[in-house]
Figure 1 (cartoon, rainbow, N blue to C red):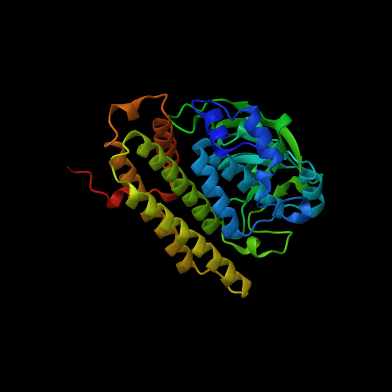
Figure 2 (cartoon, rainbow, N blue to C red):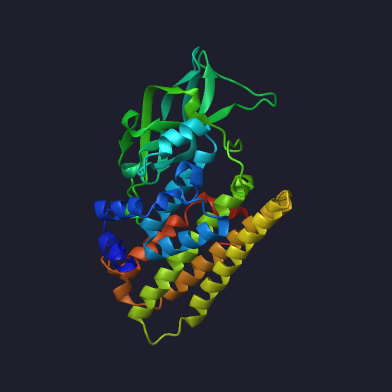
Length: 343
């Protein structure tokens, strides 16, 4: 079992999560926090899992981001037929991951299979995945199939790594070890049993009822808070004479609030009620506002750290770059229409 210190040492300056850390991930079953116990997973409750995601991001940005997105993809074990889920997650090293974008087509065949072609970007953890998840437009005779509302039908698919080609094109300033690469699939036949729809479940659990928007918002938000906690830890080592207590207390306060929200969500769903659109919007806006404030405070702290914090080999620089790379995710990005760029 690796300690936080061990993992940080392994990933400082790394361009890939090391084999030693990957083995630790599999030994501890970290990718299976959202997988039901009946499939060999840990079956965590929502708040319990979010607390763990925070600790992973606090350990290292790439480590936390890869685990969050791959464990999040393993959540789709709930969306696939039980016999398929049992088969896939029987293996302790099963690791899903992929892209949320619609990057290709799935041509419907006559034997309950689909012919998959396309290019998908930003598949975090790509070098370590056993299966890639992807979204594709359903076509027939080369033409998109349209639903009753006039929209193109989109399904998600699972393809084993052997049927994909990884494109190692991640050149961002941060999250360097996250393995967030593109991938292509050419003329691969996938059975309908290996397709799924986000909001259709084969399990019966409160976690299944959590709106995907809420799940995404809170899992990403605890990552930002975790990286912020690590950042201030490194900042204190550089400028111990500065009192950063209020920053630390703010991180703790907002982590506590996120966990409270998660418990409230589960309680509402446990009473067989729904999370309303207004409630979902309120949770999302809370995330938007906190990431906005957090980003400004991290910048404020960074400008107080001096030239040592610009050393590209330093821990504080790596955390800084990891945070602002992750913060570029579109989920919490406010509309530019309401921003004033004057100074």
